[in-house]
Image (cartoon, rainbow, N blue to C red):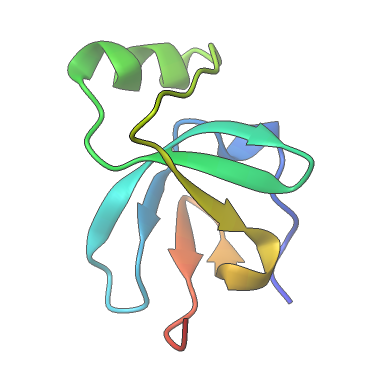
Length: 79
């Protein structure tokens, strides 16, 4: 199992198992990440400085969907 999702994941890029960029972690709460599929430059800067936020177009990533969390949040291939 991958490392748990924590506030440290905010601002990280989410990629699929093939390395395709899927979005940016906007917020983490109770092991669930809100991922913005098309973050604006302003949203990227806010996430980089730790200001969390989410909006209606975000999608959910849970810990059981993860392959690993390092510089990126990498999803498992068999979702």
